[in-house]
Image (tube, rainbow, N blue to C red; front, side, top):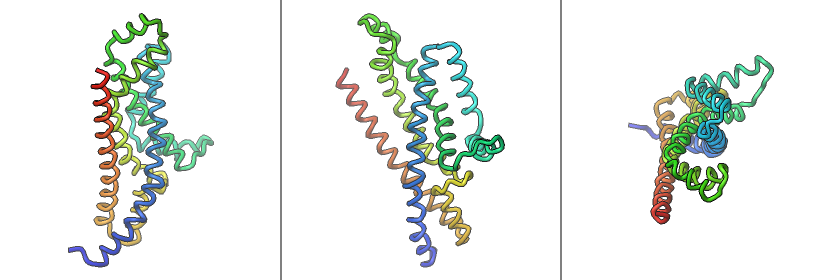
Length: 225
């Protein structure tokens, strides 16, 4: 049974953990994912267009960031780069690494979605007198992003949980705050379960938003059909 003092500790720590979740974890996720999407679209389009030279650079970038652990990337940027005179504060360092890491994964999702669009759509665009860039912007990319929406949403949910790794480079997000409370109270089981439930709460809200977005896209596609 949980005694009254532990209930009191959990009630008091809940807001102390939730606040950095709202002010650090969520902003970190939103900013990094927005940048990651820009990177991903650029990398996917370069590969889709088969631009020689740039395509190889895109594949190299994706290979590096998908093939190495996120935690190692965080350590290289935050602890390694100062050795060569490049100092980055914790939060910007986390944004940089999460953006580059997530951009590599999202690039493959968007590339696959682009390739799933029937080639006839591209040919039809040329027949109407549109340029390649106009076809991509108005026809191909909108269709691809609808296909990519569910896996991209899953990536966003995964990123919310991965932000806990930012505690390793001194970003004061939810997990680091929890660690500090544990060090002071010696109640690791209850407090780590509590922070896990808060992560679950964030993920659940994003899952609801994902389902709502998928329903809206589905109904919009049916109307167009």
